[in-house]
View 1: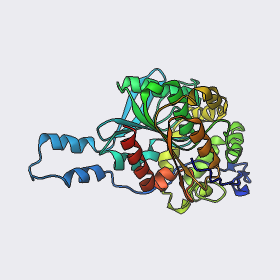
View 2 (view 1 turned 120 degrees about the horizontal axis):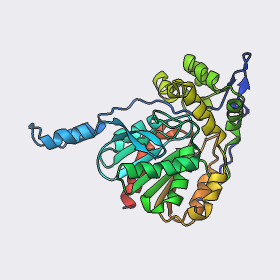
View 3 (view 1 turned 90 degrees about the vertical axis):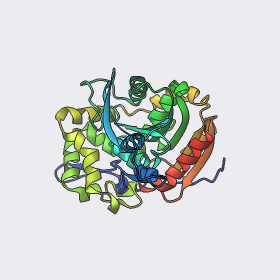
View 4 (view 1 turned 60 degrees about the vertical axis):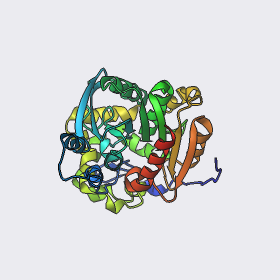
Length: 347
């Protein structure tokens, strides 16, 4: 592995400041929006058609290539997910404050080679859970195992980002037989979390300001995109759409209970969860791809080296120059090319 080291400093502009009304607005972690055609796979299929006659099979293939919102009942709750495509299953795991919407470009672009499934984690998106149940990252890894059982899925190509990457590591270390391949992007690793730039947001939530902050971000989306809040999480924060902000944050304020569930998820942030599986992670043989943005203010690129050095199955480590934490949606074309190549060689 290359040892080109890049030191990143945490900018003071990431600190969350209390406003006149006591509102703490800070380093929220939300995905940016880039429009993609959800019919990409349909067009790909149509391009190879040799007849104007549409068979029943081709109609079904076309239908299956459109994204579908579904849910699966598990012991951890009714898990909401979006799936698209057919073939071997690829399971995508988002991070804190996001949901399955993060992976919309991967689903649309990769559905011709995988049955792509993007879940909503516990306390996120449309997933429904019981009040006060465990929503820690370890509980989420356990939920993924239950989820695959409910869908009768044996093995997956696992992809994780941010806290979803930490959950993916816990899942892979705990259920290695279910992981055909692993891909990790900028994420919780070893003892690197919660990151310093996110700690003010955690403090705000613990102090009782979470719902007001979320509602303010939803009512004034320019605040959400500002340098004091979301801006430094993206290469191009101005491209973050109102629709994506709505899709990410609106579920958290549907009810007081949903806001409370998110608060509990945040309160459970503790690197003891990733430290607990470290010995097993160091025995993981699943073919592993590591892709990291060099300008991430949350997770320094040095952690991509740590993962590459400590996971025996690591095959390739890639740096995306200038990329920030949510490059899977900002730089999705580059990332998807890496995924395609990785899955091809991981057979």
